[in-house]
Amino acid sequence: MLHLILDTDTAGDDTIAMLMALRASNAKLEAVTINCGNIDFDQQVENALYTIEFAGMSGKVPVYPGARHPLLKDWKTAEYVHGRDGMGNSNFPRAKQRPENRHAVDAIIEAVNAKPGEITIVEIAPMTNLAMALRKDPSIADKVKALYFMGGTNYYQGNVTPAAEFNIWVDPDAAKIVLNSGIPTTMVGWEICMRSGLLDRKEYTEIQRFGTKESEFFMSVNRQVLRFMKRAYGLDAITCPDSITMAIVLNPSIVKSIKQRYVEVDNVSEISRGATWIDELMILKRRPNVNVVYEASHAAFKDMLSRLLMGEKV
Ligand code: BDR
Ligand code: CA
Image 1: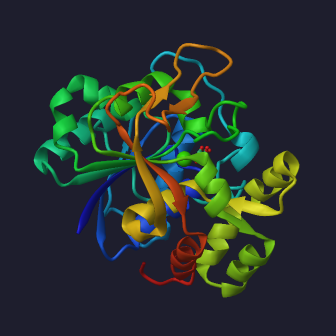
Image 2: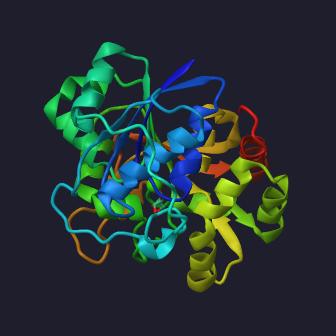
């Protein structure tokens, strides 16, 4: 059984990744922690609480608000992708469950120390909370079982600048701390989302036809993403970066190719802020710090997502 902490900037696909964790037969979602990222911070907290309630788990998974700002940099939010409320402007009702008073950073430290060697952290947001936790209690680096993160790009066009993917761009200083911490880390970059985590019209129409409350929820939270993808990429498609990352955590056989490489984050320059440089040829002769996913199975991911959206356990 996996013991998960999900760090999220809850909007759009973050909710589907969370739902997957809540419906997984081989995992227990121990806590959700919120990091600044996609949209207004308090709305992200509300979206996480709503998703837990939607999954029928109200009161069973604590939600800890964390960093409201990146460590050093200013950032811009991504309402232009996910809508004003981050949920495709669905304006869902306020959930009954309320956020915990404890800060996410302390919740992470406490959870890892309580179960050394057992906690897997799934990072689908900028890494501020995690970096702060590592600074506050560096001993947790040796106690986290594994970290999987959605972020960065592997020689692929970024989605927020030509060089960078959003999660790493928002807080490159935090990402640098985390990737150099020694935690066994796996990267699912933006290119994996574009190659294997994209649903075309035929596929999302299939999902729509399931007619379950889950498939309806999926279409609602992605409504705005569809419009954005058409506008920005000329594609009639939905992106699933966070849910393909969670699918890989729950079922590693979705990964078809993975390599241990040294990954460096650019936190210095302006034009390539947040770029992830992967030493593919191992030219730098530095110890690899990341397991980089090079290829994932679209069919296996879609199968898992479809089961989830049909209302089944995954
Ligand atoms: C990442 O940024 C956010 O908008 C998404 O939730 C995902 O985590 C994709 O770049
Ligand atoms: Ca996210």
